[in-house]
Length: 338
Ligand SMILES: NC(=O)C1=CN([C@@H]2O[C@H](COP(=O)(O)OP(=O)(O)OC[C@H]3O[C@@H](n4cnc5c(N)ncnc54)[C@H](O)[C@@H]3O)[C@@H](O)[C@H]2O)C=CC1
Ligand SMILES: O=C([O-])CC(=O)C(=O)O
Image 1 (tube, rainbow, N blue to C red):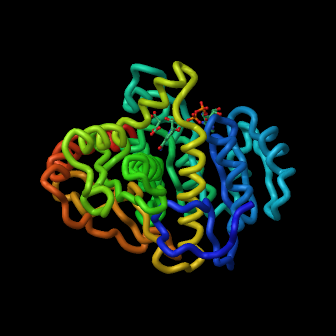
Image 2: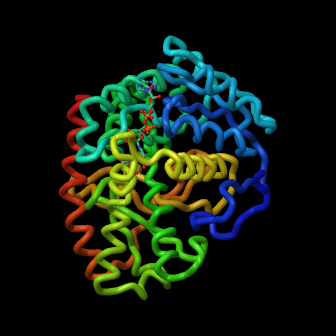
């Protein structure tokens, strides 16, 4: 189904979801595998040639999802784990993807999910600290701006936090930006990649359209509309689903894409660069010590955090609006664990 040949521009959108020059393969766990994201994400990971073994865990339904996905004719093995088998699910795992938690309904912000999802993510991170302390953790659960600091603080408390191994998955913003810009430019999304920095909610999402040849051609009303659509793309889906949840299929695609990039880095591939929300020095002097920007992925997770590059005046304004809100979200996450 998926080609194994290499692609040139690693962070750029690709018509192929997975690429692999092959080598060391990896055991991957999905925590929340029974959910709207978890199920299609598990299916996509079953098709990733870099995944040797899939551990599917949820408080409901994971063994059924595992039995189903395990019939797909790719080489990886699949095991499902019930609510009381979290530790078993995490044994020997190198990469852990977390889409566990409740999604939004119309009228809610991502921050409204905090009260429910903060403790879910904290408890899962505590188990990871105990059983798989050196694994890479890829956090999908919202609000990402707070859940990533929660995971980091929980690991820190357990004495096993490695900033190179904790990632907030902001890939859906990158996927949307390429798709929406491609639509406006009349070009393929693979030819319209956009770096998206900041966080993962509304005004904290900062697309750097000026750094893209197609993007800098968009101006005036069209520019404002495009930025707004990238920042509030999640709301578009929440509204259309009308109470049935938020983005699941596009998120599963984005989650599988980001997981593949992490696996390629872990396998020693060079030049794997993509935006992700990590512990970052870029705006730490402003009290924002987690930030999404282009990150090079390597053998140990985060290899190098790239600078954000040159910004247009409009993007400077977006960044100024992003930082105070992001700071609040991060502090809220840290305070929850403290
Ligand atoms: N980072 C991003 O770009 C995106 C993040 N999301 C977020 O992903 C999360 C999941 O969304 P959906 O899959 O649509 O929700 P869902 O409700 O369909 O699935 C969530 C799953 O988590 C499971 N779960 C709850 N507590 C758990 C625990 N303690 N351990 C293991 N599993 C547990 C539930 O049983 C359920 O199967 C939400 O917080 C949503 O806001 C959604 C889209 C994009
Ligand atoms: O909008 C939501 O709640 C889910 C999400 O994070 C997204 O689709 O970007």
